[in-house]
Length: 489
Image (cartoon, rainbow, N blue to C red; front, side, top):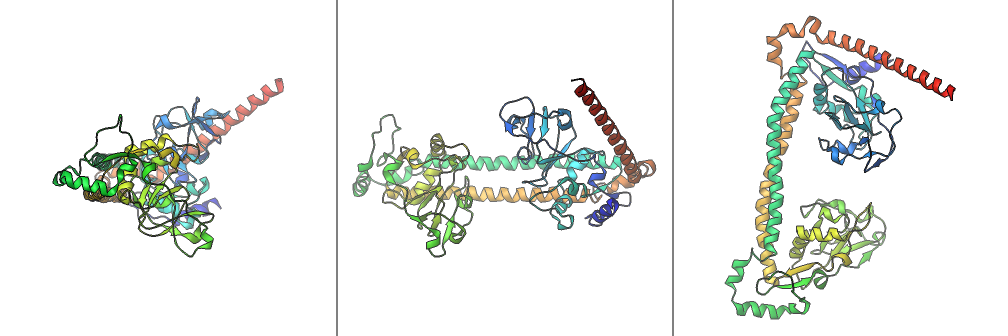
């Protein structure tokens, strides 16, 4: 029965292999996989608890990995070692990580440990290849995106070249990916610089630097007349200890220029309309990713209108702010600031999007699981308020500069996608034997006879059987010792 299952899995293989390679299964080239330790995590302790969330970024920051609330009685059984590979079985299904120089740590129950009996780097690279991810999503293997188990992972086909060729493939990967990774890191730095540039633009905008030339073109009399027409001095606050502002600007508080809408609506009692949740607003970009339908939600929601500013008060550090370009309903975790005679809506949105406001909003959050701010907390935020006409000019200057930043970011994103396509192409070629074609032609003796893939698989099976016998023997001996100690008590 077992061989029938293996043959079925192998028949689903995605490989067209060189003659010197053989098709096998992940479970055939590793020790029996092991599920992790079940316990809660805590901030301090002696033994780290590695979780799925700790590996999904592609690197482990051991300083942020929590500790076991309860350590396993058989700690050695779960301790992570150099060369171990852990694979996520739920949540981020299929994500994996090759362990290198771990701190004293065990792996959590949603991870499965594989211990390769061939080149562990070769296996690790394979577990990031298109063929592996195709197996993860393939219905033929009974694997879903929701979860996976050790039995299914063992059945994933993996191409097996001779051992010396495995080393050569890893060498090729490291050579090519070192250059590729350096390029990717450089692109990511550019993205980070663009992010800082946007905040720098906002800082200059709200200090009046972007519109300094515009104000010079306006005479003092023109500015005075505009000021008097707007009657903004009614909301002016004492500017003691506040920076000096350009002429015609005043200091005020956020709560003096706007109040959040209190118009609530039952989605079941209105016609079909657009619904905006926090999930529809992209963090740190001020962009709306999409919207849902009012028929998909329940309970009271806040009504908003085209031009209103939508501000996410849940986890304000995510910086979710957008100006609505249609009418609709939104989550009650979004504050709706209606259009006002005091500000241009995009001016307010950009002000709430600025780094100093984000810091201020975060000072007033409450709640551990779902940290929120509230209007009462952000009401006192001090805003330097220019004329409406200058606000419009400020928005124009911000958007002109942001459009340039967007072009740079789009170019970087395209380059990052191309880099990932190149990485996947290299992985695909490698596991089809194309990266080492010339090497095989030049070194036939290193891949034949006792060095062949067939002989390697035979050795692996013998080594695996030997290790498993030793492990069972150790387990029996341990049980005997424990039994003796128990009887003495």
